[in-house]
Each structure stands twice: as structure tokens, then as C-alpha cells.
Image (cartoon, rainbow, N blue to C red; front, side, top):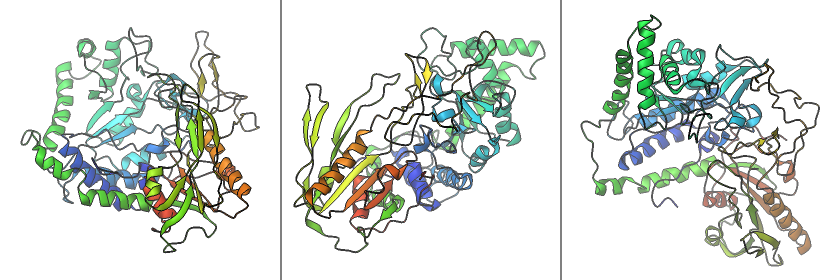
Length: 543
């Protein structure tokens, strides 16, 4: 409810407003809250261009349109790095860090580059420039974080010369430092300095650089203009890299010695301290901070942005602004659902179960809220759901998360036991990738010991959706309406983090609302006609 900090839509939600002033206002207010918490550098915004709709991090982007994403990236950075509308740095300013250079959105098959299954980004249209354009809208940011991915052309060869992740890719880094004259701090993402073969490796994402020694990795990324190393808390290998640098300097391979090169990074990093005034004012007054966090103006602005981000996809006359508005004598049915979860490097799949919309929030608007009868087994997993009698029900509201086909840290799209790939999907029901348009030979693939290329095609594989039960909940509600013999409107509230194929539920929905990181309360107020929806889809939804 925003009792601790203000609540805003996700980046996709801000994009759905099609109004950059909301993003600017978010930046101004969120940065003030950051400073009140003692945070002076943000690991944001994420501004990857969402060109692969199945990509597992689309929800953190500003969508698929490069011009709009660039505008919003610029507004976000401006809001964070200024104070009270002034164009200069001030006491509420926070260093912004745009990421992930030069865009992780084209992850092959939608797989995520935190894991080996998704370490390749592919450019079948040879259009890196469209991804770079988003970053060009915000290159006044204090810092840039590089992406994990190895970038490949349509024929599977490297986009530049190096078949390596971004920090190690001299061509990609030259586009940032040289072609775009970027003079701020460059930061690797977490784990980039660690290879999967390293002793004790956990998060290890030195894609393409696994066979280099740690010292060689540091030398390479320093040569490419990197200043900071995400997640590195031990300087041992960095100092070895400095020794290696001096060896290359003595051999005439580089123009400056290690100390000079380190001083270049030191100056850029110190500038981040100076910009936010840490040397002038390093401490906080907790009483002052308490007045800044979740202040009334911030809560109101965040909620206004939530309302403005809600998208109405369908309305068969169920939702009308200024209609009755008062449902205090009405009864609503909200079904239950479960998500089997997905395993990740942090642990096994986490099973969750509960109502598809917050029942307590719904109770603030309706006189009565009814839901399914739930039978659970000894492990807390669902045995059965039974819908209630809808004789006295006036409205059915079904909350649905967009289909969850993977986890960022989960090697999703790859079956570790069988060593085969399977498709990520935008639909709830199983999808088998056996159509004519499915690649039988992938663009990407590791170069194997015999010189051949690994085939990462998922042809013939079937998707795995952890929350398929959301569609079951929807169908259970529709069946319960039919059994009642009444014409009860069914309102579908889709809580999206990726594109969705609405065909699975559109025909039986009287109204469909889509949200991107908003509260159930905001969705309900739109559904009940208390606020007229104005959001538009920031990414395409396939028919």
C-alpha cells in the first residue's frame, strides 16, 4: 500500500502511459527516496529494447519502440540526476546507470543471459543500431552497465570480431567509448569476471572468456574501457591484471602503464561521489528521511501513474466511467490459482497458491467477496478447487499473471537432464515447436572441440508454463457463470510482464484490463468505472 516507499508501475507500465512526464516524475521522486535511504547510485534504468517478446526480462524494459524507449530512458536519467526540477545535481540527485549495453533484448529464443542457456544474443536483421539508439537517448547517465550476451549475426558469426560477452567484446565497447564518446563509468554486470570453470564459481558469466585466466580477463575488460566490476569484493585478480597490463606496456602493446590506466578509472569513479555531494554531506538525519519516504505527494503521484498505465483491451459495455461506482451492495467472485514455480541457481521451485486478486482490497469496494473452496494436501499443494454457487454473484473478476515460462537465473529453455532445448512461450497451454517456421538449426551455439557448432534449436520441444493454472481458474469461473444460468459479466485482469496471446481467454471475457506492475486496487478502480483507462500497449500482443 506504499506505507514505506511510493509505489509506481514497472518500466513497461510507465511506457504504457505514453507520457514521459510520468517517468520524469518517478525519477525525481524515487531519487529523493533513494537519498533518504542513503542510496546514491541506482543500478537502473534497464533500457534494453524488447525485440524478442519471449525474453524473460521484457517486464523491466520500456518496450519495443526505440524512439519511445530512448525518450523514457532520458526522462528517467534526468529525473534521477537532478533535484527539484533543476537541471543541475543537487541533494536529491542519484547517479543513474543505464543497462545493459548495448541491449540484451535479442536473447535467442527469449532465454536469459544470466545462465549458459541464454548467453547468446542474435541479430538476424543485423540491426544493432536500433538497440544502440535507446542508449543514445540517455548517455548523460553517470554510468553504463554492460550486458552478458555474446552477440551474433544471422549466420552465427560474431557481430564484431570477438565471440565474447559485451565487456570482453572490443568492437561493442568501442561503439560506446569511441563512436559515442561516452566518458562516464562503465560497470560489468555481476559475475562477468568469473568463468564457469573457475574454482568455487557460483554466478559465473564470463561468456566466451572462460578459458582466459582471471588476470587475462581483467586485462581485457580494462583494455575495453571498464572501470568497475559488479560483485567483485576481492582485488587479488584485479592486481594480477595490473601486473599483466604493465607487462603489455613494457612490450609496447598499450600506451600507458597500469597506474595511469587505473587513475583514469579512479577519476571517473570519484566523479560519481562528487556529483551527489557525498564529500559535502555524507550523513542523514533519520527524522528528515522519515518525512521524505512515502510522503503524501509521492504516494499520490505513484498511484496516479498506476491508474494511467492500465490498458483496456476489451469492454463489452461492462466498464463505464462514472457508472454506478458504488458496489457496496454487490457480490464479486474471485477464483483461486497456483503456480508450481521454476527452479533456479538459488534453489528449487517455490510453489505458491492463493486468490487471483487481493480479497481484502476487493472487500473495500464490494459488499461481499466469494472465492473457491480449496483442498490442499499435506505439502500445501492444491488437490482441488470448487467454485461457489454464483446465484447471488453480480460480477466475476479473474486475475491472471502473464504466462511464466522461465526464471532469470533458471537456465530456462534448456533441460539439464536431457541436454535439449525447449521453447519459451506466450501462451498458457503447452506449445510444441514443430511448425514450418521453427528453426531446425539455431543461429547460436558453442564451438565444440571438434570445430563443429552446437545446435540450440528447440524444434520438437514443448513449452513449460508454471502458472498454467491461471487459465484453469479463468475457465472454472466461466463454467461457474454458465452453471448459474445468469448473465454475469466476467472481467479479466491480466498482470503482464511479457506479451501475451489473448486468444486463450478473450472470447469468454466481457472485459479485459492489462496492467504492468500496478496494484490490484488500481485495476479494481478502473474496472469499477472510478477511473477512465488511458494506457496503451507498449509491446505487441499477438492475436
